[in-house]
Amino acid sequence: MLLRGPEIGITPKPGGTGVVGMPVYMWTEKGAETYGPNVASASAGGITVTATAKVSSIVWNMGDGKTVTCTTAGTPYKADYGKKPSPDCGHHYNTPSATMSTGKFHVTATSTWSIDWQATTGQSGQLTESRTSSVDITVVEVQVLN
Image (tube, rainbow, N blue to C red; front, side, top):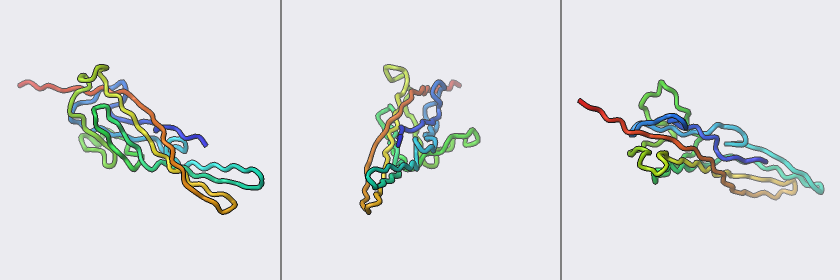
């Protein structure tokens, strides 16, 4: 069973530019290897074990000293959402990424996988695994003059 870190979706997109105070949306694609459910079975000696893995939460370290814990895959941003905050997995930056030595915020997303297993012998249990992915994003401050 292959379990990967989140396939990160975020606004602003890596390579693009976000603005201080604007909503940041975070999400992951809902693939079997990136969010689940992921089911696999193995047999040996007449016993079969079946495991089902799914992500129970994703902790986003936003690179500005703040973390966001999401219990869903998140909602991909669409332009018609405008300035509305994410309904389930979002953040706002209060400072520009220029305050960082790299000029970018290093965002990491760590998914916690809950893996339930059952054997044909009647035994069962649960395991927990974590996987991490990361991206760098740029956030700028907009100055308005009268």
